[in-house]
Length: 273
Image 1: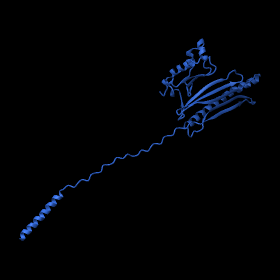
Image 2 (image 1 turned 90 degrees about the vertical axis):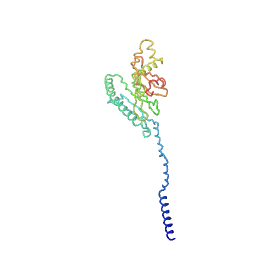
Image 3 (image 1 turned 90 degrees about the horizontal axis):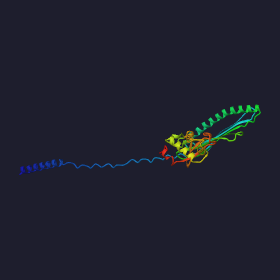
Image 4 (image 1 turned 180 degrees about the vertical axis):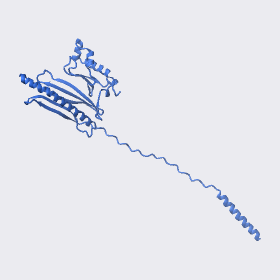
């Protein structure tokens, strides 16, 4: 009886070990790996660059009255040129102001040279008992056009003397980049100089001016007008490009003659396309 109890205990122990072993072979359940959530890094909104301010215009004046040794006025020079006052808000202003400052200084040097000749004429006239008439040089300007791309300036130069029937009048112009202040030239606006020149000649003759009359009378030819046209002689306006011939460029002209070519008419030869 005792032996049977011992065997039963051994069997129970063996069964317990067997069950424990079977339980150890069971694979543990895998813990699911969380899926990463895609998040985008916020991109800061760029601060827009403020547009340059419109120029506030003023004048820079270069002027002097030149006299002879006895105090007589022989030459008066006055050159009024553009000045942009708000250079802090208008970046183009500094470069444009410097360009006209140099232009004014150059004009004054030319006036000094003219003075040397004028005072010599005065001395000769005084010694001979002839009347002497002082010379006046005067330059003015106007802002012909200005937008966010270009600034266009037109200048007039008058040279006169009391003894002359008509003053000499000259036109000048400059175009500037409205952002950088860089001076622009013909190629910044147009692609074909010959085509532009031909259209300028047509426009000048279409005005029925003294130029057209001279051609009709046979005293002037179209070829002569074409040769006289300088395609750099233009400025911008709200209506279009204004091209001109200087006074005296042709025998039939005593003063500058200009013609307007609209922007639409010049679109096919425009550098902007």
